Each structure stands twice: as C-alpha cells, then as structure tokens.
Image 1: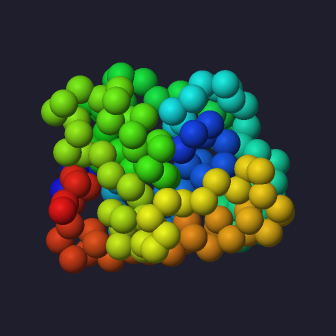
Image 2: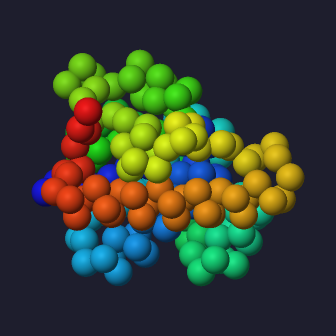
Image 3: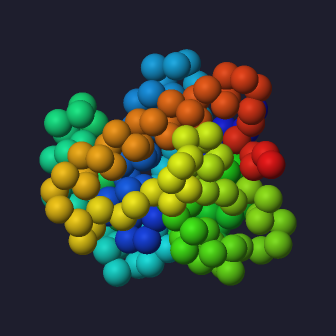
Length: 161
C-alpha cells in the first residue's frame, strides 16, 4: 500500500486541515501507517492557523487544529504524495491544471474517492453560519471512515475508478 495522502482545499484554513486532523486520528486508531498532510491551492493564508471557527468546531469533536499552519500546494507535492484528494471540483481543476500529466491519475475528489458522496464537493463553510463548521466535522468524519473502509477492502492510496 502506498503511504501518503494530501488533502487540498482553497486556502488551507477550514476543510483540508480538518480532514487532515480527522484522518490522522482515525487512520492511526485503525492501525494504518499513512502520512497525511493538507494544503490549499491558494497562498493568501500561508503561515496562518486554521480558521478560529473551524478550530473550535474541531476541538469540540476531539480534534486539535492548533498546531496547523496553512501552506500552498507546490509542484513537489505531486511527486511526494501518493494520492492528492481535493475537497471540491474547483480545487481538483486547479490541481489538474498545475500537475504534470503523470500525476493526474493520483488526483481525486475526497468524498468521491472515499465513497462518502453525495455530496461530491465538500462544502466550504468559510462564508456560512457557525453551524456549517460543525456540519463540516461530521462530513469529514464520514469521509475518513469511508476512506478507511476502502483501504480495509484492499484499496490503495492511488486513484481507483
């Protein structure tokens, strides 16, 4: 099995750091030794902590986002990570336009790949009411549990149709 996953959203302050924290916790508990990280397609939040609303919603559910610092997707990520999972279709398109051709088979939508769709796109809570952040935690957990199930069934961390 391949050993690394990168979760990608727009600014790396809401969805992808949340999914990274959820995945890290649940993959370890399930006995998987998989490196997980997150980043954003945009760089305007680079170096910042996760959004305070997301940190609060995650902490309430038992996930620590305090150490997180946002970073932008880089060309090296396409070589380093075995599977790069986008939070939404726009993120996926941005990744596809940046990635070299050989990396395209390792790009997928997180909720699709994990079998947790619908929805296909993980909604961005940034401009939404506070309840959207709590809903994001539940969706991240559902997606990660689907990812773990897929891995248990013999899936690898490479994109499978």
